[in-house]
Length: 306
Image 1 (cartoon, one colour):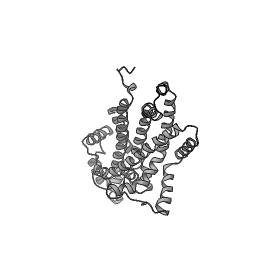
Image 2: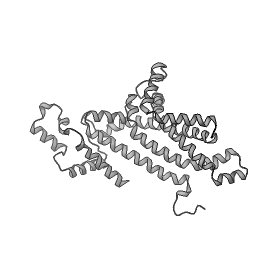
Image 3: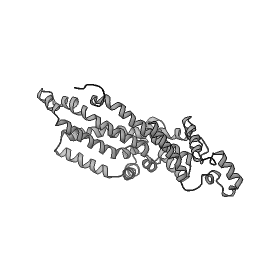
Image 4: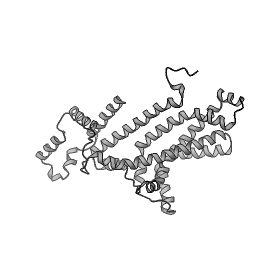
């Protein structure tokens, strides 16, 4: 993780040089103030006159101390900007995660247990269709139907208070979760179908265990590992990929902050948001790696699982 984070931070910082335009011109703002003296002063203030390696080390040292810099546009600490937007994104992603995990596992289990029936065909067809539709299309349809025509939900905003925020985030969460729900449904179905054909399940049947007990103890429990892994990867991707949904619904989250910062060339904010996305992805995937052995003893090393 340390090596990955170090390399990622280096790439993120180097993006400042890959971006079009000179950061000094955005820092000064008014073209009339672009005098040689003013340009030299700004470069010295932001260490832009230092070599690349020195600039990176200074920036990385500040980041490790919690100082993400100051926004060019908002003229306030970037950490405060992220803090004010982070709650919306985390709540949205958590809401979407509950939807796609609970409903996805339920539909996948029903489809596996009703394999070859009309129910299985309907679930498989619906999830295939849901996977093929981009989430921004889903978001626009939800806004058109449930917000504009039926007026069941608000079109924009993230609400005040926990209950009101959940109400405002319902449509965005559905739009964000639909594609993931389809993936989790199909992964659950596939793993449960594979588990049903294994020898230990046949042995359980021969001992006279009831079908619900077999499903609960031997099928679903052993199938939960791949489902957990896919859910974790999907969740990590959502933390870094809620930009489109937040933009469609006008949410003041991390994604919309990233879009606005790119459009206004607010480099410190862009660097901080991308770094947050990398860290969030790494943390979630690492937690999944640590939890997985607790669910499946076969993945532990040094132990005899016979």
